[in-house]
Image 1 (tube, rainbow, N blue to C red):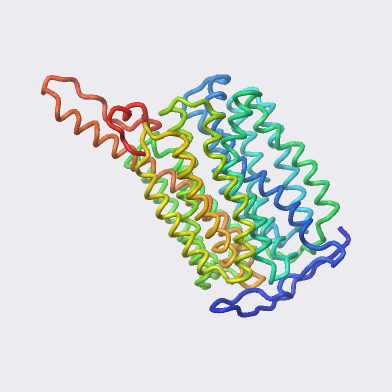
Image 2 (image 1 turned 120 degrees about the horizontal axis):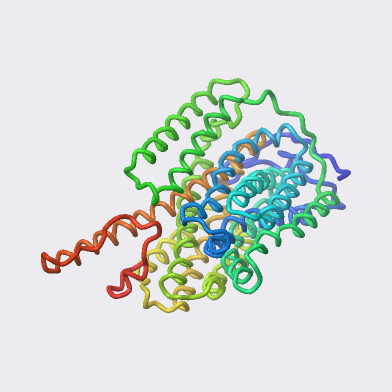
Length: 483
């Protein structure tokens, strides 16, 4: 890592949008090295950390069979990772200013690999949950650091192309997760959904040592303890409430208290960050309308994307009786569509900007999502596959340009905060999307059972109308209940 990059802030205007100029974040590494190879190395780490958010879901039942425990207990294998990541992500902005970026990236990558190895070696459910929290430390830092380095090494006129390549990690990994996880669980062992990260982390770290330039650290001021405590409390309680919504019930006092604590903590966090001299995450980034608008669009897209990634495998396996690997294969074509389209949309962004790409992509997402309301247990997997692929076409067109335009509208000094907020919003909106969809499905199911019970004679036993841990898709087969 012989090259040293020093940030110098400049901005240029393009259309109706202010973006970072070529000299804004260093601009580029030495010409002999270029930026493409370092970016490929960064994509590997980002891909691995995002992949882990979906690959584990298909192994939950196998883990429960091996270790025992209730469904609520085994779900903490996924929930523990999400909660720990929600606490770690706000730290990333401060860490990126405090420590040398390339070294922080390498340590996070190796830490993620070590946590993965420990998860594979876990001998009980409790130790697996604990090791998942260790794994989440590196997994939470990697995406933020990757974005910050990307904006330091890539020329401004090539940022769309670079973000298209970056999108291979952010968008394609969640789609590949179910099929790869299904294959490993069905034909190898659930342990390998973790072991597979270890060699990738080692090779990625070695490559980073060789090709990533050097970024001076030591620019961070005093650590904002009140800011960290309030944002960590707010995100932790919010994610905990969303993860336990079905177990405790939306109207239970536990959920209500958690949501109240979350709202109050996040409000206090905003007040603190506006008053302290050295904020942990500068909330003034939201003064940039292009950035705020991009977060609103990203939250809608992320919520819908992960809700589908959660419920379609559930429908295919519990409702249609498919094994994990065949169910994962139904989701694979949409990942291939995203793999082809995200680099193309990045290049188009450099040529025409984000507006038309976002409009056309959102229209395709809206139409395809509306079409998905017609899915029933009699719908063929092939038809579901085509609907998902059509929807992926819209997501691939609009998400990366929207993502890129938001970050590019910020001054270079605020890119680290913008990257951290971006990851927080994507993570929280994904959990909200799944929670909202679960509430909708459960409400429809309960209403449907009540309507059916009303048609029966008065002395007929009425089915239990309480909330199940996971909506019972088999119960809806006879009435063609839509997804």
